[in-house]
Amino acid sequence: MDSICILGLGYIGLPTASLLATKGFSVHGVDVNERVVKALNAGKILLHEPALDVMVKSAVGSGRLKADTAPIEADIFILSVPTPFVNGKKPDLSYVEAATRSVAPYLRHGNLLILESTSPVGTTERICQWLAEMRPDLVLPGVTDGCPQLHVAHCPERVLPGRILRELVENDRVVGGVDAASTAKAIEFYGSFVQGEVLATTARTAELVKLMENAYRDVNIAFANEISLICQELQINVWDAIRLANHHPRVNILTPGPGVGGHCIAVDPWFIVDSAPATARLIRTAREVNDHKPHSVIAQVRAKAARFTAPTVACLGLAFKPDIDDLRESPALFITRELQAQGGMEILAVEPNIRELPGELGELPNLRHVPLKTALEEADILVFLVAHRQFQNIDHDLLLGKVIIDACGMVQN
Ligand code: SAJ
Image (cartoon, rainbow, N blue to C red):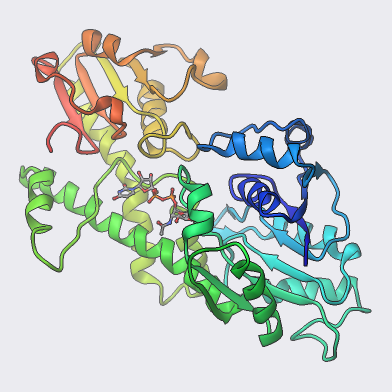
């Protein structure tokens, strides 16, 4: 098993492809985006992840990582494509289906096909059904009996953006095949490069485990966010209250924020809700609590702004979490844009991790991207939205006389 074809060269697929190439596998990366393919073949990347540029350069330089817009034959196929939701919070499996159909002609008995994308329960079995339609000549576990066969397994990615390369190797992995032979084959593969434990289960359990992990996090953040609103109503300092409660040996309340961003935690719990709509009541409510949080912050800013005639409001942080430059699905960005759209104030956007505001954001009226220093000089209202390290230890004298709204615990800690 030494050649790999990996579909989807995004935040998970690209680091995985380059890591596997540096571990000695011969890797063929596939993406529908020609820009991504062209950049990769030139040893370059179009996304930001610490140390990834260096690893990609070395992987491409070694000749073991190549990219194309179409798959080729290989020993192992990895699907690492997006699984977003569509209207009505229903999972959109069209990318998984398209990737499956695109590799189908290249599959041979003995190959291992792995789904790494976070997916609703039953998706790995669906893959077998799609393949059975396209390739009746193949023995597919769960669909047809026989030997030799194709091996099909799910191994959900679990890495944290910002720490992807380390976590790809160090994290424990959960591996579930559609049958025992598929599980064994996938365990052998992950065991060859993962330092963490590689844990065997079924495909359906592995699918739910991944969704549970992100739903667990979402529910706990929702608790913190709800507490922050209760504290606001009761005029209690939430940061003090949480710090004190966390002194209990069995309490560990997470950090409230402006909402939950990113492409995982705000999406994946809906896959559980979609599978068990009547039962997943807590998980659904947590999603609603977290989705509501940006609106509460906007209302808080507007209430404070009402005291001024044309206030200057500094939004500190635009990224979806601290110390990254990723603005996608960011509650901080949503709040900033909404405040700009509602009008009546001059917005100063401070995001030290980007050089300029992307696309149409840069052209919006009454919105300027400024350094922290300018915001501290000019703003009437400071809204701390993301706990970037650049916002820590701001001289308290510079905050005097300003209205402060702290959605992420920067000032009040
Ligand atoms: N957040 C809070 N309060 C907290 C912690 C986080 O408001 O106490 C917010 C963050 O600001 C951010 C969002 O939640 O907006 C999500 O951030 P995160 O750092 O918790 O997680 P992600 O989305 O970057 O990555 C998660 C991880 N899952 C878990 O920690 C269970 C990661 O391991 C997964 O691989 C990833 O989702 C994924 O791809 O599914």
